[in-house]
Amino acid sequence: MAKRGLFITRNDFPCVVYDILKERFDITCWKGVEDVPKNKLIENIKGKFGILCTLSNVIDKEVIEAAGNDFKVVSTCSVGYDHLDVKELKSRGIRIGYTPGVLTEATAEQALAILLATSRRVVESHNLVASGNWTAKGWGPTWMCGHGLDASTVGILGCGRIGFSIMRKLKAFDPSRIFYFSRSEKPEAKQLGAELKPLDEIMKESDFVVIALSQTPETRGIINKERIALMKPNAILVNIARGGLIDQEALIEALKNKKISGAGLDVYATEPLPADSPLLKMDNVVTTPHIGSATHKSRSEMGVLSAKNILAVLDNEKMPAEL
Image (cartoon, rainbow, N blue to C red; front, side, top):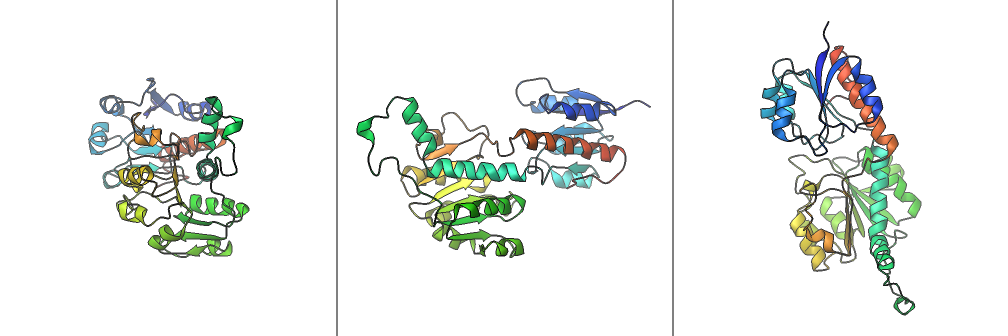
């Protein structure tokens, strides 16, 4: 029997991913160094059994219709799925795989990394040293002081796998209070001494606010101008979830006017972040290029899980992680 066709939207997945799939599929892989353009995505998906994609590949109704009647599975190498038209896929009986769980610890680590880099002015300090502007004259008792986590109040928005892992790691820094925003009280968070609070109260009282929410129609833009205005002048906002959760222009305005102390961002309203973005010109902002899951271990596990999701559909079995 001829192998079924599979389109893979990148050529830089870990080698084990291709090894798992090549025995069962006739693979077409995008060779370009940039993300596959939509017209090429449509061209390559025609007649395929499935697709292995990433967050940067929008699988909308036009793409789904172009795939044809033999199209059975979309496997995204991500925990987020707002780039997929889930309703359209499900209405056609096309199964959806994703990769929750395996990127939890890596993403939680990234949240702490950019929180500390922002609060302790790590990037700003590095640039000072690298530019040769660190002089003995410049040192002073308050020079380059930042904000510490010790005895602080931290608010975590979202208490799923990633939010809880952030909370657990934060405990080692001995904050005085940890608040969290969620639809319901989480027993595991309560055991750590964290308190469920309304969102606006968290925004008002926290020294650090870490966003770990899923992006849905209900949460898009949830951190708007009014909620940013509630924050303390010394507060730092960290986002490792999705850029669309924040009104980015309102955040830029608050940072410019020193309404809040700083921001650590791994995600943005538009990705890649434009080179002329004001965020890149601010000393009180730390930016990273959506690398929350970027550890060798995590990315390898994500790729393997994505491949296993596809094989499960081919074999008409339960997916390891199905949406």
